Length: 134
Image (cartoon, rainbow, N blue to C red; front, side):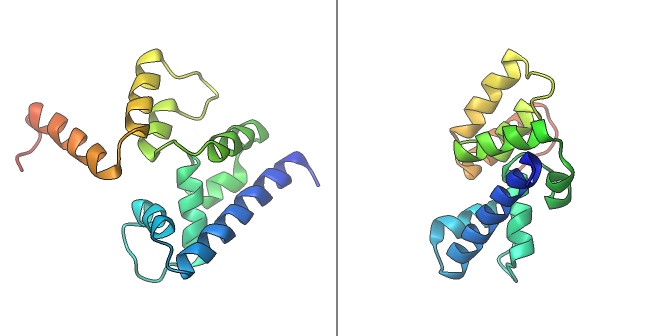
């Protein structure tokens, strides 16, 4: 087994574990999945794999499967130290090009927020820029 397939197997196992927790009605597992999917209807293993991929910094499961060995190693490291939010991952980037100190600071800030707090923060910023009124 190559290093890359071992890393992909790691994510497959993580998806199966999360899917079993969702089926067992674990509230934290459901919250993780719903933070990505936004819809509780028909949660399948494939949709949970998508959740794992997004949490790991990829757009979808297919991108995770196609990722380079370096990207997968970094994603496994982030996954094992799970504190990163999708917005935090966005601001840190893939790690191929180091994030700027400003983006690292934003990523750390978003990682400490709940999804609801992130939404409020972004909505407030958009209002200040006059993008929309709520």
